[in-house]
Length: 269
Image 1 (cartoon, rainbow, N blue to C red):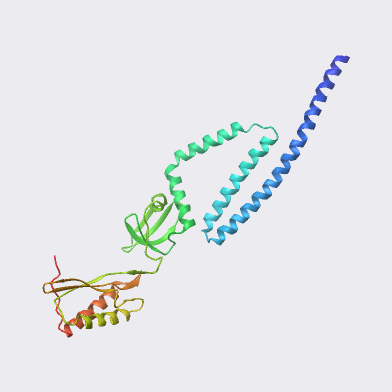
Image 2 (cartoon, one colour):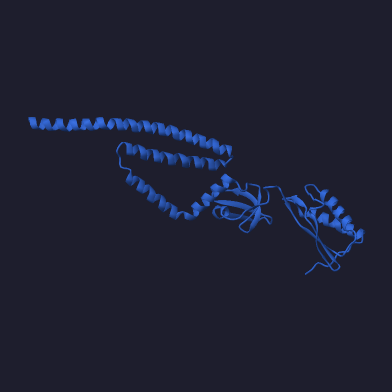
């Protein structure tokens, strides 16, 4: 081996050595960032878990959101570390963006339902066991899934509502307050004993457990016509009241009117 060849080898080795010496600080810094980043991600994941437990989120949603948060942060960390050691990340980010766009377009409807399910489980406009009115159906909530909500109607039908449309439309929650107001209408002929009738109805309604009737606010004479008085009774009742209770009230009112000679008018057609 002649002197020129030895010189070339020494030059290449020296070049590699300088490149290695330049690369080692970058590698050490990248490893430090990677270790610290993983520690921070674990801390953030732990704090997110505690926050979700405090908000009493669904266990399956907690696990999914923690995984999603952890994976997303780790991808960002890996891209950052790769850039620190000189690895080009532009193509990698472009590929991830294109893949995300393609998946998003392909699963647009499913992602809408998924997002709706997440919103419902986080903000809780209703919960399992509530009776709600949504999508043209009224029923008891049997299950809140990540993509759908399952109701059971009064006639025992099972209704599956997509969470996407459910979260973007009006929901009536009959169970949130626990009570609601109903209207009972009486068509009577002109009477002189309206005050006696009023007192009797007030007493009768309030005797039923869970029913409340304010004598002054919820007993209304809405119309007075020739030979006819229309009375509306608006008791506050439990949201899951039964027709049996209402039937009992009407039977007692009928018996009282018969006893006091209060006649019923013909219901207008």
